[in-house]
Amino acid sequence: MLRALMLVATLLPGAVDAAPRPVTGLLAKNGPLPATIPLQIRTDAGHDYSIALTDPAIDAPVISGYLRGGEFFRLLVPPGTHRVTMAAGQPGDWQGIDTGFSDGTQAKLTLDFDIRANRRQGHQMTVAIVDGGLRVTDRRDQVICQIADWDVVQKEYAVGRRILLRYLDQSLTTRSRFCD
Image (cartoon, rainbow, N blue to C red; front, top):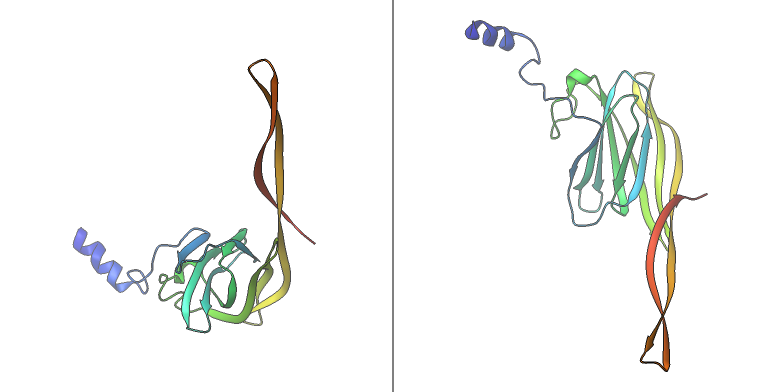
């Protein structure tokens, strides 16, 4: 019985070569920089997508992700200028991180991901299959503002009977929100 199943598996095209379909999210991160700048991508159902960012100066991979078509995708990426390569294919055609889709279509563009003062400047895109090719149909800046809040507590205490001392206990917290 086992031999029969192995024979059938070897005769089916792509049955042995296909890699498991990843969930939507991060595939791999290379490099020491923290991933803090947003890249958000919207797609339609029907195709899956892989996204790979490389450093164009040294042609080195930076970060990559996988997106199941129609699902929400948000990836935090390191700062810098990155070449973004997106590939689309059928879910069953995924061959793994190194190969991508066996029969997919690609789109490439170069984007800047910056931190300026308290603003993390990323991108929001919509990608779709148009006339048989992968196209970015909409691209907008997506900026997150980092806001610092000081929490000040005034405390008093007495030393002996005569001296009243006061001090401020300060703690810094940050919060983030989308900016205009």
